[in-house]
Length: 179
Image (tube, rainbow, N blue to C red; front, side, top):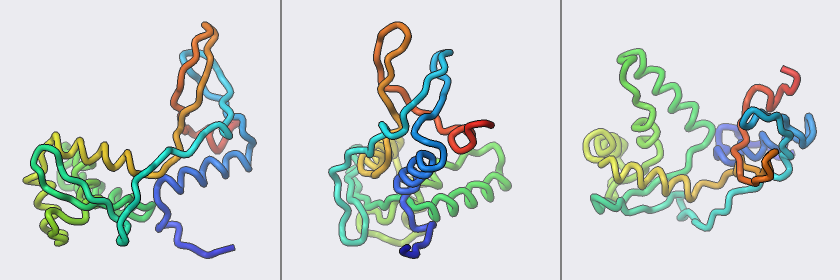
C-alpha cells in the first residue's frame, strides 16, 4: 500500500473514497427518504463528475472575472485546506459570532493570485474589499465546474411513474445504516 497524507486528498477524491468504503462495508444499497417515500439507492450508480479542465503545472486554474476583468488563479481545496478553513472560521466566530465569514474565508484560500500578485495579503485584501458579488459567484461556479468529484445523484422513478434525478443525502445512516 502506498503511504500518503490524507490531508493532501482533494475533496472530490475523499468523496469517492467515502462512497467506495460505504459500498465495501455495507453493500451498494442505501435506504433514504424521498418525498415521503422510502427508497433504496444503488450507490454503485453514483458516477464521477465529468471534468474537462486541466490545471497548469502548479495545479492551478486561471479565470478572468467577468465583471471586473481581473485575472485570478485558483487551486482546488484539499482535506487539509478544509480543516484550516474550518479552524479560521471558528476563530472568526469567536470575535464576531453574528458575522458569517465562511464564503469569503473559503475564497481567500482558493484564490492563489490576483492579476499576477501572489501575496497572501493582496489576495485577502482583494476578497475583502475588491471582489464584486457577481465575480465571486462566477468564480464559485468555475470552481465547481473544474472540481473533480462524484455526483451524489441517481435516477429514480417514483410511485407516480415519473422519473427524475435526485440528490443522494449523506446522513449518519450512510456509514451507520442501523442508526
